[in-house]
Image (spheres, rainbow, N blue to C red):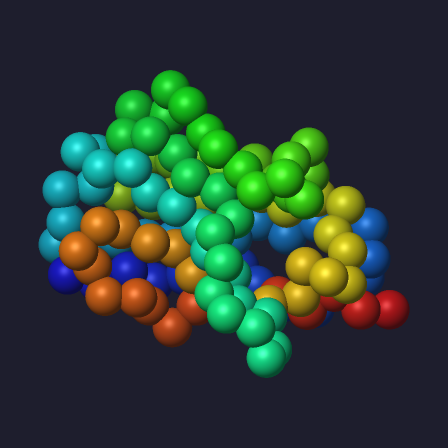
Length: 112
């Protein structure tokens, strides 16, 4: 069982990135998925989640209206579209699947 995040990078304030998380060896379509992030010197925090059928999504208040979580159950993949990025969004982003070890994450740096 493994999950691999990708899509991070360096972007200017106001820019966009799309993160991707592919999960293997896991019955992806049965479970809700979520994204979390950890900024330097801070604890890992919840960012967004999506139900197994994508019927509902939840977001932490300070990303609402800027980030969108989605999933493709046929591809065992969950996405995080991040728009209007701010320097405070700088962090390592991780996706989470119940019972699956955390992956390496993908670094997002927002800076001019």
